[in-house]
Image (cartoon, rainbow, N blue to C red; front, side, top):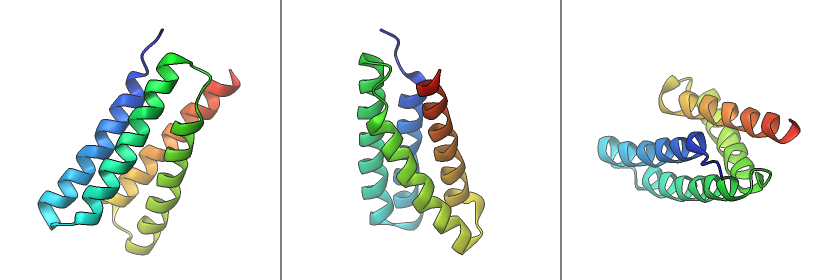
Length: 102
């Protein structure tokens, strides 16, 4: 059983981003979305740790975040946080797809 450290790190980064959005800007939506997607991603990382081919939950969460944060980045043009999260989520999608194919 190999632990999906990258998946858990990704989930922690999402949660931390939500907490920072709340702390710095008072954004309750950032807090809720960060906790929701972070917990979903952590669950996905747990499922991958148990069965490496079970990437459905992680892939769905990373894909949604890529889309949503990509749209926010396009609208705002700001690298932080939208561009960073979109890029990190896109890299996670690529990682999951590549690991599934190999």
